Image (tube, rainbow, N blue to C red):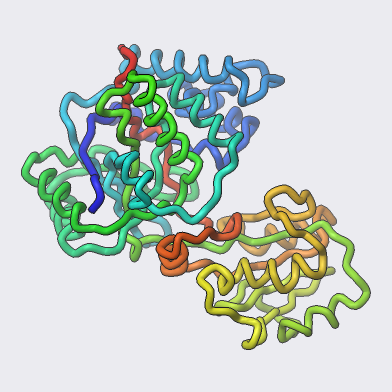
Length: 411
């Protein structure tokens, strides 16, 4: 049983939604955010990456940045660019990319469900990234970015959501980054809200698809406010968008290395892989990678006796790490070793070729995407995926929904 409850969203007025909404804070750096927000006073980067309004030399983790975020949120509310709804609602958020759509329920989920492992994770988090989001939440007294959750398909939930979409007009409808269409519906019927709330209690678990740092931070802030006895009912919950697992698309998360290639490299590869030159730039099945080296693509098919059944060890990213990257190049900690970097599948194989051809990297590996079933299996086993195992597309935009923790007054 999980708790999925309606809430009063802080959200943009309809005429400004396309101008407010921006990419998530963690997929652009400060310089990119500054460029993207240039000339747009409504850009949510003024709140989510408030360093863009301060000196370029300032650290994005400086206390002034969080103070500026809070001040900008206050200004957006005072100017009416953002406004808080007066009753508890659900919201539906549909993203359509290249002809395929996914629809999520925008709601609040429980910090207690996370503590009880009813909201399951598949990644470790880094302390410094948690601290950043905790400072941001504290300063704004709001969940300023949604957590991307998934659940196993439930027919009753899907029917309720689809019926609402068919019988109601969207309140937001615009196209943004990478030609993705974003549509939002206000779900404000108390009977349907109750039906959805009850339907979710039948689920055993929710799964974090993306946003582990945001989740940890939101939960820790909620628990902190409880301990300090400064909590409200709202601070016991955090902002989430929940999608059925069968609608989600995971793209590949590719690897690029800056390493010295040993003289016997190909001989070492043949111990664990069937190696062939290829015209392919993306593998067409699991347990296979495409490698780009010195202007040539190779296919690397993992030998059958090297494929394990453990839910983590059998992942393609694990096979590449355990059979090639670690033993041949001695890259053991991919979180900290500067010789390895990661390229999201949205950028395509051409980005890998560019990095190698321009000698910014030595060798690149095009991966087969992790499947949602793999993610669920790892989370159910209470295990952890290797870093950078999943790249979800399309990205949920930030700024369309904020969750007020209601422990300090707002305009």
